Picture (cartoon, rainbow, N blue to C red):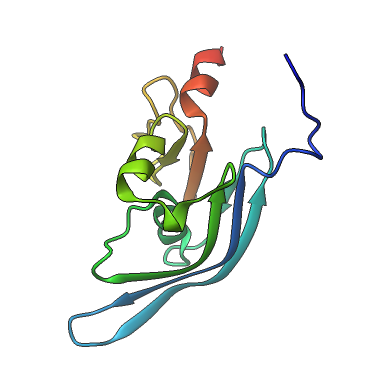
Length: 141
């Protein structure tokens, strides 16, 4: 089996200048996320923490491709394992969800990624994007 050094492998998740705006029926535009940049290296864990309404969930939902296309305008670049998620067809994105890409929602006592693990955060708002979750859960004690 060939091993790659971390220097040769691209980051698992790269988000560059992510912007999300919502268009209301009255024509009003709400800018929910404005210029998020982050990188998650392979094997790393990222928790997004902040005050209510600061864009944690909208950022995660945009990465997962779960925002309504009719009202959400998403710009920037989101690459997962070298794949541009924002340009990926819906079918291909659905195939990634669950097996390779999952989101643990903010409610800490009921959040389950695949049935094998539970978020145990006691207080505060947080959103975690889990990658390779089933494999991680299977190897957890």
